[in-house]
Image (cartoon, rainbow, N blue to C red):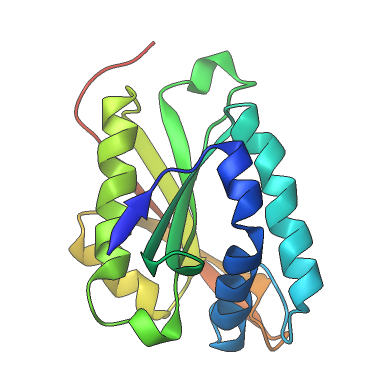
Length: 177
């Protein structure tokens, strides 16, 4: 499995494959901010919009693939570049693994890649939110993330049902500021 940190231009080239991953993730029931069924054109548009954030340094994306043109996983870090007092932290967002690749350690590998890159860039604190009771919670707990608490009725799942969301954080080695 190859893991790549694409530039904004490369990300733009990959929007079709990333849209396929996003629609599969939503169709599979994962709560990643979209309702089902997710139209492929809307998924392409969403990924296309991410390219500007990557170009501006506000978002870092990693993709995983076995063969060119078919993305099996992705994870991103959102950086609060507009807040000088928060340059030490980032939000882990949109960890997705295609249903055909689940259970093989890809999610754990993508999580580790994002954590290692964040630490190398001087980030000392990561945070995320995930649907309470989702399979992703097991990954975060067993990867050293600390639960902060849950917010009831925070977001709708792909079926439109309001679900609680659990907030997690993880301290990384190093200092920044």
